Each structure stands twice: as structure tokens, then as C-alpha cells.
Length: 115
Image 1 (cartoon, rainbow, N blue to C red):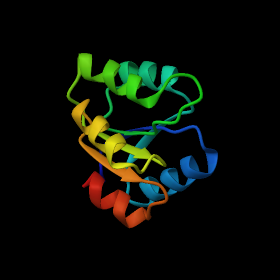
Image 2: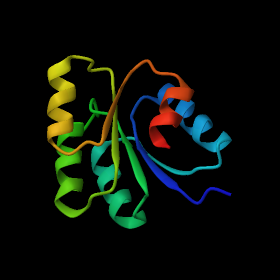
Image 3: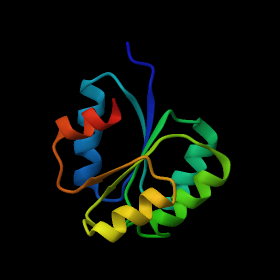
Image 4: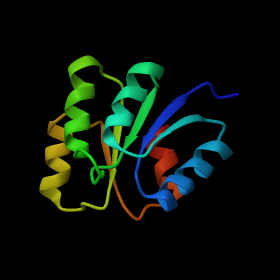
């Protein structure tokens, strides 16, 4: 059994469910956050092994969440965003993201990046 815990910070319920099912079928544990602030607090409370982070969150920008997490931790962060412009990707990677997946994406691509 896979003991990897993944924190999903994503406000879109459809995408959240897609990610949840993709992770669950591969035996990953997951924690769901609907916004940036709860994502940050769940991160501190649960110390996940990996974070899937949406940039377009309803309360604070995902880049701010990334900065807050990077102040405390080197936990791998994969940004999952509809923002596909190259400068957005470069900015996220420069701010400490480990990878960047553009929506829409397949379950297989996401799982390959998680591995």
C-alpha cells in the first residue's frame, strides 16, 4: 500500500473530484482544500509528502500559497493551473514549484509527474 499523502489545493469541484479519483485508484492518501488559506493550514497540520496546487484560488493567489509553503518546507509542489502562458510557468518554477501541469490534463500525466 502506498503511504504517500498528497494535499490537493483546488477550488474547482470537478477537477478536485477528478484528482481525488485518480489518486485514490493508485492508493494515494489525499487531503482536500478548497482555498489557499485552508490549504496552508492543512499543510502545517498534516505535513503531506506532495502538494498539488491550483493558482486560481478564490481567496489568495496560488503563488502566495507557494511562497508561504517555501518559507517553511521543501515539500514537492506541482502547480496545476489553467494559466498556460510560459511566463506563468517560469514564475511558478522560479518561486519554488517542482513541476507545472496545465489544465486540462490526463490522469496518466498527473500520476507520472507525481511519481
